[in-house]
Length: 218
Image (cartoon, rainbow, N blue to C red; front, side, top):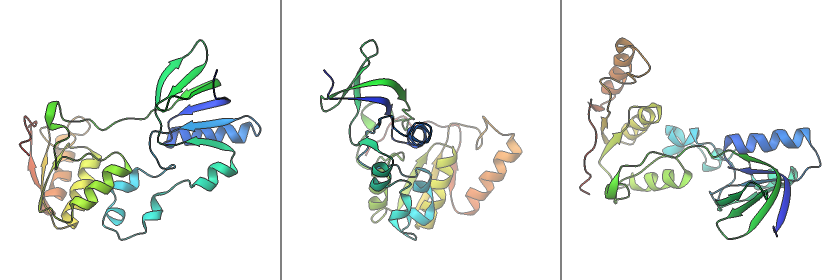
């Protein structure tokens, strides 16, 4: 038997899941709602994590929170933090969490979001290898900035571009490694991509094109 049954059960505490819960509550003032989040925090801005003002401590750390515990209480939304959904019985309408408890539901929304792509094999979690997806990732990188002198950024996407900027502002030597022939070649024409590259190189970023990482020596 489930410990608790909800009219609306949402897996994912990010922007999609939180917005869905907020919208459901506006449409249904009395229906029970719960959010399952594998992070120990309430809803925060992932966009803020790659902004120099936040990363370099120029604005308050509290500026990252988009919802605080009082909001969930006021909206009567149950918030299960630091827990993952590990099993789903769609026929019985039962969801099992990583701590073993089972939750029943009438309606289920999977708002799972995305994960940062990791390096393959044993290099993925070597000391000095960081990813930027969660608040814990950001905290680890901020701590490493205190003793680092050089950084290699993998990935020629938007977050990579912003990361290069904030690392240069922190005084680090930066090399950007990308698989593409030029920045965003999958999206833009070469002239547009080179304009972005000019902005990077003018700020002191070294570019390495058409390359992939084979091994991290550590």
